[in-house]
Image (cartoon, rainbow, N blue to C red):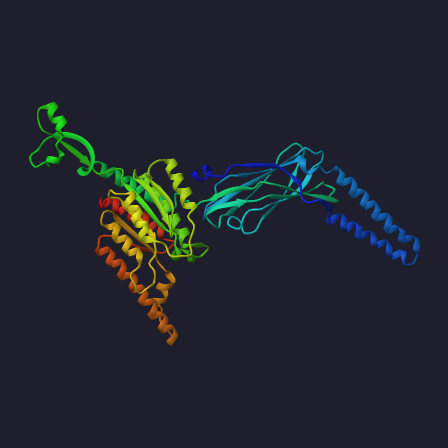
Length: 458
């Protein structure tokens, strides 16, 4: 799977003592010392029994000293961290920790892996047994909570012998930078798989159509009514008769994905932000476009352009898009939509499909993103996707029970109506619009893309 290919590299380090005094008595040793105070009961009546407390505790401490001397030094322990899958939203990531030592006794180890809150909210504590000159392994899994580069920290180790009177404390520096990706929908039960199948079937049917599009297919004899621009004069000169070019529907078209990383997409829906859902949709769209034979490009922006990837094809290009989407950061200010539109117009002068993942500001003035889309619609086919605010729609459809709820419902209805009017005006100008909830946005966008391919709108 591609998730395994994107997994961070394994890392290994030798442990060192965790502090100047990197050892201590265990709970078992402390309990034994407390048990020694039982000698005080007969000592209350016969004072010479009180010496039993000192003899008992001294014996326990001597045994603890011998037990501690048998424990290997921290420098003889090697700790490694292996990533069995790449961290991504909505997907379980599995990590394996390994310990090897060159001591002479069996160690009972307790390990804590220090991962950042963006990956793991609560550190995972693992317990396992390590034999001499053999590697001991333990695994745990988690679901990433944020995208982007995360700094995985050190691994803290506490180990003791089977006697368990003394334990040592060590730490291994396994600090590494880990990239967390958007949600990768690759299961057969996900809409992406069904969308791929539908797209492949539609593409095979369209490849049989000739005379449409501008991709060269073959040559044939000139027929009355053929466009003079389609005549191949070099072939006509060789054959001595007019020859026309025959075209087919384009199999490779540029598809640009615009991702708005501004303030409007920082609202949280469940555990993730709207921007997280937008990056998931963008990744699914890029996968489907590349499978369909199109060339996918990415432009993520806030006040400035954050990620810019020119359209291309191939597995390495998909990985580049995944890494770009993983590094898109949400901004607290409004995004500069006009700058993004002008940048895309300069990068893509020829007609293409533009998927714009954004939202509409709830203001009395016309949102700037509408002007940016209008600028792109002069040359490109724009699929404008606005994130639906479900709570706003539910509030507008609710039945008020008092005056306060009535004013709230009226305000919500006005905002919903304004959004519908803006999207309707964009459709009148030639744009394709879609308003979808975050949970359904991926499947809705992929289905709309299939409709565009099926109807040859581009």
